[in-house]
Length: 534
Image 1 (cartoon, rainbow, N blue to C red):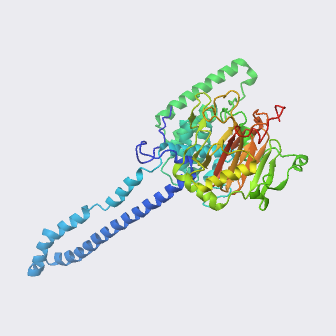
Image 2: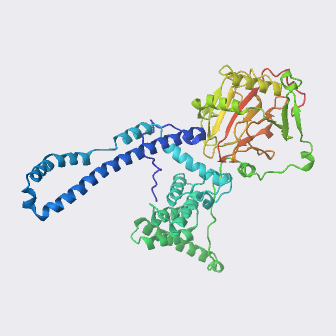
């Protein structure tokens, strides 16, 4: 059995570390400036060391010339009274000064700066979280390890490569999660790069050790045996590999005997157990969800598409929009999803982001069992809540939503601002409370979430779509736009076709803000119907 230690970053106790950096690209940008500051400090330290060595070098060259002359005629040299005096002076004081110079520690400034900055460094959770995000992106967008390793991702501005050591670390993270499928993929990638001659701090023996065990755990005994033999060619004394070799050969011999006794016809056949691949998870619509994220969803028929329109919307003759109506576009028919174009300005976006940034914290979900808010692996982002009374811009945005939807925002939740992290996502979920969650919004006293308004506050280079797996709709982020849909039918029953998800961000930085509007206050704005599903 391989014992794998979680990747350990340098640095500090977790209690001092800032948790959850990986869940917000916006906060990760602060780390870039921190690292730049450290690099500047490191260069200053290097310059100080170089200046120190230059002084020592000049001293050594001067004394080398002097002693070369003196050793040719020692008596004649010290016979000169000035030379005799200077020799006494050098050995008594100047060599002591040189000793002090050599012993002088030039690293104090750098170490002091590093110690201060260390408290803001990511911790183990961040490093492992970022690694898991890469694995998630790999699955969602059908990327092979070579594509990721070479940085060939769509929309990238700053291409980056993974070293064999990086691939090895990704494999180790998967291993600690008992995810042998991804362990195999990334250990094979590390091995390929080493075979191609990449110079690395890791060796093939270590890679093969993990790889052979991961393959064995997936049931491919033949390949596990082959990899173990390859390992032993490199390190014949490897204790674990020798033990595994005997065990694998014993298992294979046992299987061969069973096959022989079962049927003579099968004696020459080679049976390889079927690989498990990616483990079955808790999300029933995983395949459909990931296809939509890749833009491979169900295409709407031309007949349905003809019923989708673009229009100018004046908010039911609202004075604010009569002269400058909002641009409205139908994104989907059932459920009806509407996009508003140019509905929030760049200046407003920056103000909202500036207000939210200092308060960003790991986004939570409602736990139906406990009724409390908690973090979850299926929601990777950070969020903050902004009230209308805090800033006129937030108040103006709230009123804009009310004017365009015709719904009362006084009973709505505060404006939630979210920034997604590495591979940031929010897996399929409902915004409204189902019948088995009667107390979900009890503390608010405003009823269920009747509708959702979602602002896109940034463009996303690749990924990051909002998808509706039940109906096959994909809505792609576009800065300055917003989408709106009803979560409940007019009868108050939940519309289960509104189950939606935020796809992982493949490349880029995704900022959104949303407003959840509640039932209370809408009684005359959106009257109930007699039909349950209308």
